[in-house]
Length: 52
Image (tube, rainbow, N blue to C red):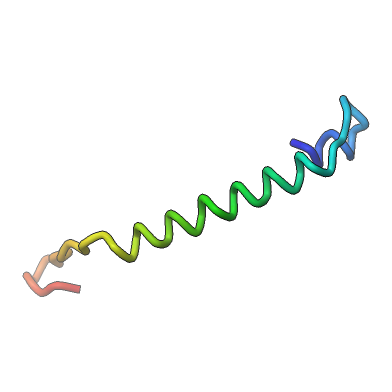
C-alpha cells in the first residue's frame, strides 16, 4: 500500500508505516513457520497404500 502511494503520488507516504507493515508481515510469517513445524503431520496415502 505504501509503495503504491509513493509510486502514484496518492495520499501521504510514511516510511514508518512501510517499516511497521513489513516487520508485521515478517513476524506473522515466522509464527506461521513455527506452528507448521510444531503441528503433527498426517500421513498422506498414495493409491498403492504407501505413505509418501
